[in-house]
Image 1 (cartoon, rainbow, N blue to C red):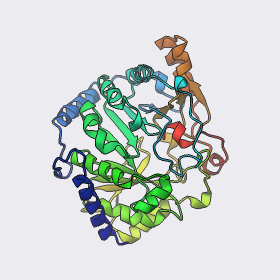
Image 2 (cartoon, rainbow, N blue to C red; image 1 turned 90 degrees about the vertical axis):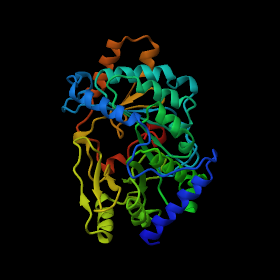
Image 3 (cartoon, one colour; image 1 turned 120 degrees about the horizontal axis):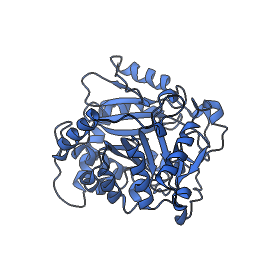
Length: 385
């Protein structure tokens, strides 16, 4: 399918899903990048103030290689309403008993502690975070934390259109939506569920409410969706999207095979053959994505090269799993239970010592592409993405 017809097709899909919104209210498209909420100006002022008055970074979150961990990913649940092939085994996973998962108050207690020590970005993940009943309240309470500049969510998009107005009002500032194909039938094959049009409606709602860019995460798998690279790139011509192509990564139960992985360089070459004018964009020091833009296009494309070109040297990310374990590396097996220490009555000082010890054990880099594929690790859905 040609790139421009595909872009027009998505436009038709977005318009049709707009007409089918349950509210029945007319939906208008904002000007490109135009925020729909006055709160955006307040957020911008808040971020500038925090940047100008930033305190020295915490030793507790600085590892032995000088990496300052200012970005925390918190998994709100292990449950998901999809069954993506690259994320979990077909038969599903054995879920942690509810009593062993972090409570809302425990999540917020840990978030406050990390933000106090210098974390300025929190991303809520899962499973699927938007199936947690109190997700809006969690976002609202995180928004009250002084020093926290960004609250993001990584979602499969199924519930996004319905919840996003409330989430934006609560303080959500960034959105990543998983979408691995633009073909409805293939979508059902990859995720083993229906819901393509709901995801498209969620993307439209994010654009409508002024999120820019709206990040679209696409895991590229050979023989499945690598033939859609150009169609995804074409979407950025008229939409404020950052389409992020992610190299297929091994997790327990996803039957990873090296032959299924499409490398960053191969993807980049494919895109450049169609758009030789593709330009490289500057990178932030801790960025995991290599970003590019086609001149004249509204959006951009990025490549997350976890397998072929790791970015361990500038990693600033920590993870808390839904059952309260701190992971200092996505591909590491080492975890420490913050939940157990919380429930045992650990003081803030004791928790910080535990966190510092875990961060101090973080290695310079992960074990490497081929070694990772042989390691026993949690399915991606349990790690928190």
